[in-house]
Image 1 (cartoon, helix red, strand yellow):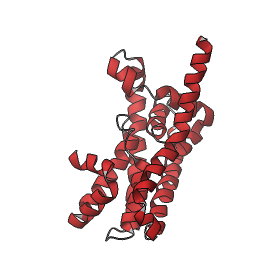
Image 2: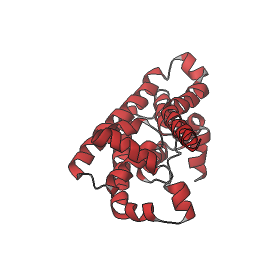
Image 3: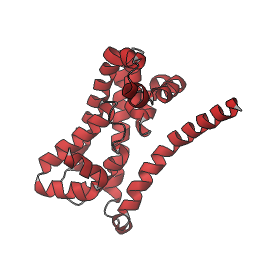
Image 4: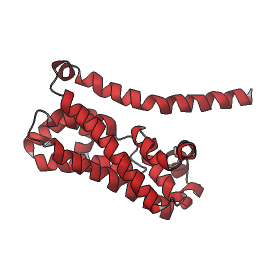
Length: 216
């Protein structure tokens, strides 16, 4: 758990240090983080986009093989979504109806946004949702609750995983050796988190303003 927290707070330094110490452990932790972010609704805060970019940057300057990493992380993303789908299918209805304070106000707090996203995009939400933090954690869970057809779910899950992992990982890999990127990595990492979160923040703000206007 300590290494997981270190990855989140100091992703590039922690990953470089881990690769130097044990490259197989580095592969495993990267696999685990990507799988957990999309596999369990208790981990929507994990920095998937920034982590993928970081892994690509580190792979460009270490012994880590970016192509092995690409296959490994695509697999992690698919496994995570599949786990989340079946959790939603077996436990989702009960969790949605739970009156437990923590479940209702924290664990399930993002479900309405995911429902809105799913209603707007249908099956494509599985693909599009990959590029939106928090939403990507809840969309497969919601797909399980509504019992989306398995073949359609898996097709969209695989397509979304390949697109998401490839874009962020290989972008980091191919621009990672550029001096400006190396010197401003921290800013780039934070910018990725902010940019990918903005659509969700704007949507939440819009809903809040709408509620306030309705009350007035």
